[in-house]
Image (tube, rainbow, N blue to C red; front, side, top):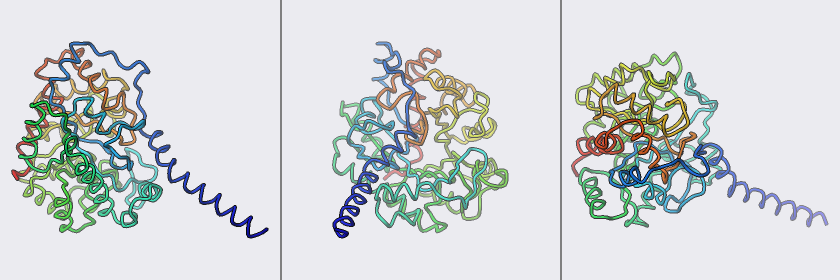
Length: 393
């Protein structure tokens, strides 16, 4: 009798654990990545729809790889997958790997030593054990997932590593092919684990963009949200990494970097950094948004500014609010330096998912932007930048 009770209890425990691993990660993602789109959708005119289909669209930042979904299949949660990106006429999506996020994460100040949110998520998703205890392996596992998807569906998904890859993608789309280009990025430089040799490891695994920090100070330097009032700049290791990225043709991303780190990077000869996902401080006075003068300096070095889609950086929850931030960015740095940086699937509430991106085209038209300006912001500036920065082959 006792044996049967114990056996039954063991079965219940196994069933409970199985249910947890199957349903809990999806439940978490639904809660963290909602949309505020009305049930009937945002109104989009025939004129805006036609313009949207003529655009070459690119986005600098989505964290979808974190959630362990098969992005080749349309999901009923989150903001992106390949079917929805293609439906939204997106040509190029940068997918960033998230590897560490401090407990109690906020825009003001976070400790490097705070407990990590990503470790239990990776355990709950049953990701490979090697990714549970190494930030480098955590980044590589996400990269391998994307590579596997591209290998399984080469007619839908292409990894972009070089200028030649980018040119081939754009040619294919001009010829009517429904194919999505994806580029790998890292949300912060901590997956290097303080070892410059790991920059080669990430590069060889397809990474072509790297943010230097995330929500905490790391071996490269200070975060906009780090300890000590965000006063830390670029460390000597950070200098070595930046120089290595320039040599390799990798995109240097200053999103989340402290003001002093931004100044230090801009002072290095040959840097041409971006802000991948942000807002404009004079439009939305959030601590998440860098001071306007620093944003102008990034643009003056040839960089581009990716405008995010969430309320904390645009101070609103509608397509018109994003369009307002884009207008503020154009007024600050000029129409040749503004692009999109949605932060899709990055634990944010977006006004629309990737399939309904035409709502932004409508909002930009309503805000008075010309077709040429809209084409630049929606992707033209990003493609030009990558054509100049990525390695030739």
